[in-house]
Image (cartoon, rainbow, N blue to C red):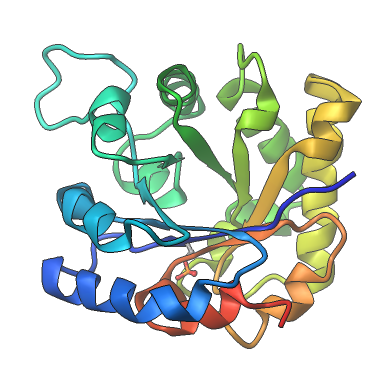
Length: 248
Ligand code: PGA
């Protein structure tokens, strides 16, 4: 069994053309010998310039969302084909901020995931429990629903990346402990085995996200079921390179 680690940044609603290009230029030499896949998911409007800035390097560009329809009357939305057209390879789907502020549901996550796969994008599907859910012991129930509804009808689940992001750890500086993250990601992997197939569970890449940084990435990445990270705050700086180089 070999899963290639995958470290992805999530710029959220940060950066502009100038600062984005500058950061990518600085990152290119720092991450060029990475033993993992590397991506930066950036605001839609920055995609064309960031794809250009990263071209010829091992940094791939991703989107932060994708619409489920191929085209049509969806003012303000962007389809998977439009993203592909600009050289995008990944799309974050169902990030907790989209669930919290933009009415994202497991059902809409499912539609977006199927559309992304259909267009040849790799979806990074985010799941994770709220603090209250962790405290009342329903974490696994929440994850089971997010996975079974969010991934319904997916033919080859190994083409999906899952990001486990406990909502209470995002942007709070509170990381899940190595053991908490490992235990929950092992549960996610087992669930994928039950919903799809045991081989799929062995192959699928599962990231941890939530205040991951240069200091805590080694411990998290040493866990047997954690294959990578989805990095918010620390992807806005060259610190991101230290996470990419977690094994050096
Ligand atoms: P954070 O964000 O690293 O700033 O906690 C992670 C994410 O939201 O993907």
